[in-house]
Image (cartoon, rainbow, N blue to C red; front, side, top):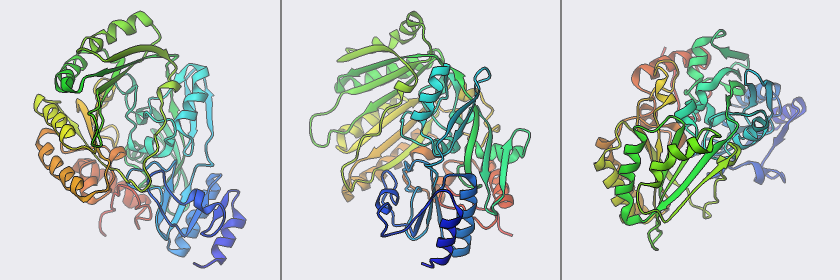
Amino acid sequence: MPTTQLTRLAERISGAVVLPGEPAYSDVKDGVVHRGEPAVVVRCASTDDVREALRCARELDLPIAVRSSGHSNAGLSTNDGGMVIDLRPMAEVRVLDPERGLVRLESGATWGEAARVLGPHGLAISSGDTATVGVGGLLLGGGIGWLVRRYGLAVDRLVAAELVTADGETVRASADSDPELFWALRGGGGNFGVVTSFELIADRVPGVHYAELSFPRDEAATVLKGWRDYLRSAPDEVTSFAYLYPSFGGERMPLYVAACYAGEDRTAAEQALAPLLALGPALTSEVSARSYEQMLGEAGPLPPGLVPVVRNRFADQLSDELIDRLVAETDRMETLYVELRSLGGAMAEVDPAATAFACRGGETLVTTVLLSNEPGPEAEFESLWSELGPLTSPFGYTGFLSTASAADVAAVYPPDTYRRLSAVKARLDPDNLFRSNHNIVPPPG
């Protein structure tokens, strides 16, 4: 690896250039799940640092991975032999206008930190469900979290973004400034540049109520059908997830159901959540008042060397057949985890053409995770999805995919959305410098 350009880069930036063999390298080379051996990690502390890093990457013809927090299921937060642009030092969360709810988040901030800063102002942004996930990656992909039915996707609150494009230009995108790029950034991922900061309108969420229940595994199919029926008429204030955990060869785990009621009123929350408590003979049940920050959990550690295989699809209708199949498969496959996220409400009220996140009409997001490195279960996993295909939508969500193939991209962006994104890509990144993502390819010629 030529050192002249890297030495010059280190002299020009306020952040740090980390090379293999240096003491800090082992701490910055990997993503959360995926291991990498990049030629250089640039710890960017400013937009100017990003600009300099991109200039150096072009000079050295290095492939680029952009890291917000490193949680990419597809391993897009690191690489082998390339440059990692690490945005974690750019982690400011600032309330610009408390009355309007206008906030500015840098890409390297985590959603837990965002919730901690916004909470004292009575504000929150519907993000994901994990405190340590970074702002940048999740926000550019969509953001399906605990407030999705009440306030929509995280990306629906975006009003402006600042990014550095492939040619080193700093651009601001909003409804008034490059509206087509602004459309593309809301769901189109990191295809158009390195987004360094976002401005969003946060919602007034001074507090929520959280319900957590567990049910006997033998009752899982019946309870899930009742859960589905309830959510079809539940108030938008209620967002709920259901979980089927793997047994790993031991005793089958209970079915877990969790729900968030977006509001402080205890009586209203209990009335809205009461049908969940009546779904069946609950093993455990609890309803508690929380801050939104307390809704965001921590990602648990994985066994060493285990790289989960993750796939998802939206289900326009969570049918009885789909529920029965998912329950049966988790009983049969000892390393399969299934998660169901309720959708609808505010998410579905946005015109699908208004943002690059076009798949808004589903009833549920169905996510499966294979937690095994054995070849047998992986073959079973592929067979499972060939059978689930007719029971789900052909489209899915980038946040819960462990691969980033052309087929995956086609399963995220409907053809009209992809063509529009490709036109933006051709204008801003015709050489496809930003390709370590669910890649939108510029049209030929």
